[in-house]
Each structure stands twice: as C-alpha cells, then as structure tokens.
Amino acid sequence: MTRPGLVRGAVLSCAWLSLFLVCVYLFFPSRRINDVIDRVLLAQGLNLTPAAHKTFLPGLGWDNALLSSRQGPLLRFDRVTVRPLLLKLLTGRIVLSSSASLGSGHLMLEQVLGGRQSVHVAADKLALGEIPFFKTILGARATGSIWTEGHVTREPQGWNGELRLEISRLGFNGIRMGAFLLPDVDNLNSKGMIRLTAGKARLESLALQGEGIYMRLSGDLPLGVNADAAPLDLLLEIMPKPEFLEKQKLVFMLLAKFMASPGVYRVPIRGTLLKPEIL
Image (cartoon, rainbow, N blue to C red):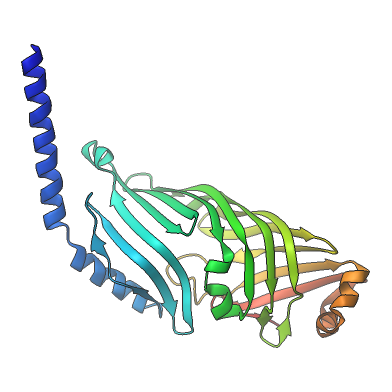
C-alpha cells in the first residue's frame, strides 16, 4: 500500500473510532444504570450521592462520591469512574475497569464478566483518616495508610482467591463496640490476608504490632450483597506489655472477663459490619 493509502486508512480508522465513541457516549444508558444502582443500594439501607454522570470515554463517573447508611457516611472518594475496556469488548470479552481516588491514594479494580469471571484489585496510600466509616460506626479517630492487592476468580463452588493487606502507621482511639472500649494505639504496623474459599471470606491473622502491644484479628467475614446485615464472627487477641496495660488499666479492667491467660485477652467481636459488638 502506498503512503497516501496508509494515511487515508489511518484517517478513516480514526474517524470510525471517533464516531463509535460519540455514539456510545450519546446512547450510554446512564439514567437507567443510576436507577438500578439506587434500587440495589436502597434494598440494603445504603445511598450513593451524587448521581453518576457520563464520562468522555464511554462509562460513568462520580465526583465527590459519598456512600452512606442510616447511621451516616461510610465511604467517600474524590472521584470514581467505571468504564468498559473497548479493546477487550472488540474481542468479545466484557471487562469493566473501575478507579477511585482519595487525596493522594487510589483504588483500581478490573472485573471480567461472562465466562470465567474474575476480579483484580489494587490500592495504595488510602488514608484511614479520610474514611468516615470509623467515626460513623465506631465513634473513633483512625490514622494510617492502606495498601492492598489481590485477585479472585469465580469457580462453580464460588469465589476463590486472596487479598493481601498492609496498613502502615496505624492508629486509632475511642473505638467502642457495644459496652466495651478497645485500647487506644498509635504507630502500629499491620499485615494480613483475606482468603476467599468456595464463596466464603476469612480474615487470616491480621497482625497489629507496635510499641508495648501486639494484637491479632482473625475470623470469618460477611460477603455478598447483604454483607452489611450478615453476622460477624471475629476474634481479637490483645497482648499488652505491663507498662502499656498500666497506662490504660481502666480499659483492660473492663476487658478482664476476656482474659485467657496472664497478659492475653481473647475478645470476640459479633454483631454486624455496620454494628459490631463485643459480647
């Protein structure tokens, strides 16, 4: 093919692609998708504001997105986008790419629909202090930065895979669950993993270690569209050094019924995700 022919072919390809993008943008059913999202969330007592708007590349976007429950705000992001990957679509695969930003932090999610479904998720530098869940649900102040990465696939028996989790410089104070307070901590390093097996999720030993204290959180996690109302079954093990225990003796006096051996507290966390309780 001659050079003018190559140029003409490239121009026509760009023109067809531009026309395709314009048509998809014009006919993308954003109102219908908003209605579906609202109905699904409302059934769980949740609300997402503001409504989504179309993005230039076919997809949906939310600016200053806020997810709330009846108790108040739970999650917020500066910007959220959800788009189908067009090149994958042209090969017959439906893949959704989602991204969210919060300050300097970000969350990326890629979901394959149809056939062998899978989800890949990655997040970095998400600031706990910018997530309203802790204040709304636990009445607490939280600090620290989250990093996570994982991949899960849908098998005949359910979802399988794992999600690695790290929290740097973790701190929280004022956490209350039911009638009990947890000790205030600061500058902890935390590592753990969430493992999905046959559609069930388990938190495998999330270790929290800092000066004067070591804690370990593990147990089953709710999963699915009604996860907010499903029962929690977690165990928090707290191992304070004598000087740390002395500084917060009132908290540990209230937790005395959970002492399994000298210096070791095994605290069961029950209730639900939106109303956790120590029983």
